[in-house]
Length: 232
Image (cartoon, rainbow, N blue to C red; front, side, top):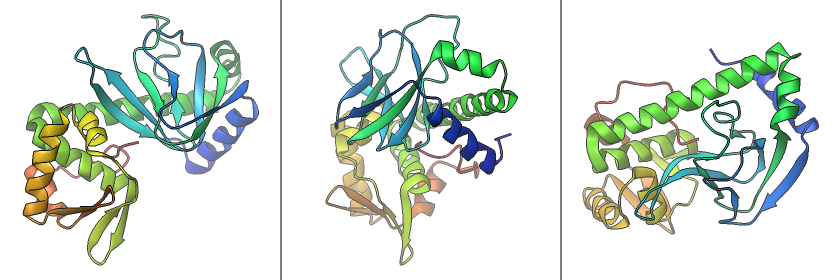
């Protein structure tokens, strides 16, 4: 169960107040890379940070987009299975983060039950979200991964416009391919099919979804909560 919204906001403000340092990132700058030492719990204070897993062929499999107020590095901070990052955190646009050293956050947790519960909730929620995304990829293949990503984008960044859903965030075909674990060529073909069938349209890297029910029916959507069916 997630912490009440008012408690979440209060805890985010608290984490910002006790942070040890702040960092600004330009677009495509790395916050950390695989192999870097795990030292901080991060919170996004502006912009957007993409978390991804580098693949052996040079591509990256994007897991989620972290927005203002989201935590980064919470799932590995207290792991007993290593002290190195396995994910890549990259600025999707100019962004800033606040960092709290792991020793500092450990001391805070010893005397703050609400903070401990909040972190447990965040770790569980993010793990479930990543699991449902991977299930869609395994069960429905590359095309299903695209459909799932479009639905998640609609839930996270969608704006209703005359019965259509306008995705407010801009993503290139390569960025979409990263979220689907496939090549840009495959995404190009799948997007062309969707555009031909008037399921979506694209203008200036913005996607407009005209028939989200088609995407949901193709995936046999089970009506998961939006908190799990999202891109962040």
